[in-house]
Length: 353
Image (cartoon, rainbow, N blue to C red; front, side, top):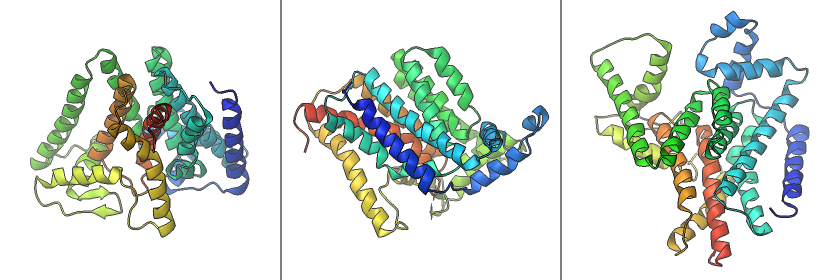
């Protein structure tokens, strides 16, 4: 560890905290307002059981507990700050687990800059949403699983369960790590892909034979896997195409993949587009340079990182991408770790551009 590593991080987190708490106002999105409305109706065990959309039950409870304080805005900002801090810390812990360490301050500042200049992550610190909390739990659970501390990992997953539907990322990442440790990761991806193929096929058959199962979970799965396909949904509320035939499915999935990793959309302002180009160049240049270099690579780390990226990306592509790209948040820690590893490796061999 570098001598002033923790002090530098403390200064940056303190600066972010003061900026967020003193100079920004907590924003309530439509989801935030729904969470607040439902949480107000939770008063006992019975009302918890009867809550609408149970896949968000833990989010409702988070809003309920913070609402019980005398300053909802302040404590929710604190929750977001702690979540952001944990994402950064556990990403670094995962790098250290794979024996990837910063040997000088340039490497460390590069790693920190990828987080603190990532607008897609930072913007959500001022919103009353639970995405950052879920990502922090995802990184913690993955780290403890890597360290064979399975009890901690499973308990964190259970805490995240029903926070948001995206909590399934943690389950699939832990399953991937299990197969990865058993050196059967190809089997995992075969099973993982087969699961989605089977699920989508079943719902296509149900629609074809006009089955109508009016259950909450079936309605949710039918919407995110089937109805969004028929709608030609590439990016929700932003980009659609016409669904013409069976082959349109592959076109939709391919365009979702492109959109998931897109630099910007046409609707962005010029300044936003410029920022995106600069940041994406900043984060992907070390990765591209490393690919074309002759450096030996850390196979274990890259298998882990690209495996987790694949798990999350496949899920998002097969469901839908939100118009504000909030679901893309879940891939950023892994991309940042990969970029930091490539930058560190290239700098140590003096081959970085």
